[in-house]
Length: 618
Ligand code: UGB
Image 1 (cartoon, rainbow, N blue to C red):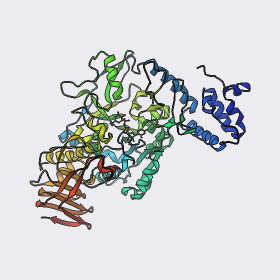
Image 2 (image 1 turned 180 degrees about the vertical axis):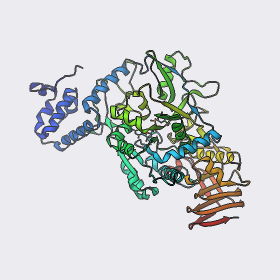
Image 3 (image 1 turned 90 degrees about the horizontal axis):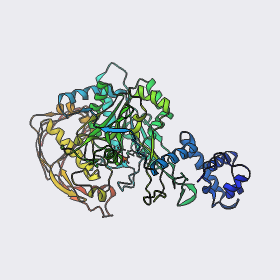
C-alpha cells in the first residue's frame, strides 16, 4: 500500500476516512492534529467503522486520548513508531540478518569460583562499593509463561518462610547498605535507592504489596516506581495499528520490553541526580531470581577492580536454554562488541557463520557462550554520558508470528520490543564491556515456566519453574554451608509436577545473616551437621551455629544485637514434604505451581526479641 506522505487535506480527508471526517466536530483541535498524523501514516482503517456523530462519541474521544498517550510516550511519537515498525517488519519479511557482517566468537571474561580467595577478595571490594550503588528492578512483566495471576514479586521465594521475592530483594539491599556503611564508619551513611519499573499490568499491585508491608522496612522515599507504557500492536506488514478485538474504539497494546528502563531512568532525571549525589554504580535485576543477591558483592567487585563500564552477569549455559548467550561479535569493518545474543537468534547466527550444529553444547556439556542472566552492572559516569546522547532509546526488534511462509499475514498482532541488555549496542569501541561468569547453583534460579511447560524442558536443561526455583535456594544454602565446614546430608531426588529435582535439607536464612561468604564462615563454629529431613530457618543477624547437630526442624529469630549461640543435638520429627497436584484448584496457586507443601509435624521455634547474649540448646 502506498502511504500518503502529507496529511490529507480537503477532499483527501473524505477519501482517506469519510467516517472520521463526519466526526470532526466531536474532536478537539489537538485530536484533529493527531487524526491527521494517523492518516498521514496510513492508519485510516482505525476509523472505518465509526458511527455517526452523536453515537458513541465518548468512545471516540477515549480513542484519541489513548492515541495522545501513545504519541507522548514513544521517543519521536507515533509517527516514529510506525516508521520504525515498517522498516523492521520489512527486514523481518525479507529475512534480513540483524547480525549481517558480524562473526560470532566466544568472549573472555571473569570466571569466578565460589569461596576461593579471589572470590572473597572481590566480595570485600564489592561490599565497600555497594553503598554508592542504585538498584533497578525491572518488574513490568506479567507471569504469563508462569501461569500465575498475581505479580511475580508477590510470589513466595520459598515456602519454608513464605517470604516473597520483593521482601527478599528489599532485605538484601538493606543488608548490603548496612554492611557497606559499617565498613566506612567515619563517612556519611548512604541510603541505597531502589527503583522498580512497573507497567499497567503490575503497577497498582506493586504499590499495594509495598504499602501493605510498610515497604518491607525500607524508607518509602528510598523506593521509586517508574511505569513503562505499552506500545501499539501492529496487524500487518504495513504497520497498520491493530484495534483491540474486545473494543473497536481502542488500539490494542502490548509491552515494549524491559529495554524501556533506560529511557525511563533518563527521562525521570534519576540518573543525573544520583550522579550529583556521588553514586557510582547502577545495578539492574529481574523479578524472580531468588539467588542473585548471593552473586552481587563479588560481581560488583569485578566491575570495580576491572573498571568495567558494563558488566553482564552470566552462568554456564546449556545449548537451546531460553537465556541469551554472551557473544563477541566482530564486524567485517573491524568493529567488535561483546553483547547478549537472544536465545532465538543465537542458533541461526551460528549456523549462518558456518557452525553447522548451531547452538550446541561443547565437550564440557555446556554451550561455549555464557548464559546472560540479565543482571547488569553499569558504571554511572559513562552510562549518563551515553543516555544523554540516546535519551535511553534502545535498538528495537520485531518478532511477528507469520501465518505461512509467504510472510504476508500474522497469526496474531505483533509489536516492537526492546531489551535492557541491548544497551551496549550503541557504545563506542572504547567502552569497557565485560562479563562475569558465576556458578548457576549460586546465582541463577528464575521462576518463569508453568508446570506443564517445565515438565517438557529437554532432559538436563533447567526447568526455571517455581519447583526448581525453590529447591535451588535450599541447594545453594546447603552448598555454602558445606563450604563453610558444615556436614550437610546429600540431596534426594524427588519428582514434583513431573519435574525431577534435588531435594536438599530446607535451609534458609535472612540476607543479614550471610550477605557474603566470609560472613557465613564467621557464623559457623565447631563441628555442625544437618540431616536430610531437616529444616533450618535463621532469621537474625547475630545467630551463631556452634557445634549444632540438627535432625528435624529448627527456627530461630533474633533482633539485631541478640547474639544467639545455637548448639547441641536437636532431634524432632521435623517437616514433611507433601505432594500437591497442580490441577487441584482447592489448593492455592502459590503451592500448586511448585507441586509441594510442608506438613509441620514437629519443630523447635525460638524468638529473641531483645538484644543480649543467649545460648540455645536442646
Ligand atoms: N519485564 C519488564 O519489566 N517489562 C517488559 O515489558 C517485559 C519484561 P522475562 P525474557 O534471565 O532467563 C530475559 O519475560 O525477556 C521484566 C532476557 O532477555 O522473564 O524472556 C520482567 O518483569 C534473556 O536474555 O524474560 O528473557 C522480568 O523481570 C535471559 O536473560 C524481566 O523483565 C532471561 O531473561 C525479564 O522478563 C533470563
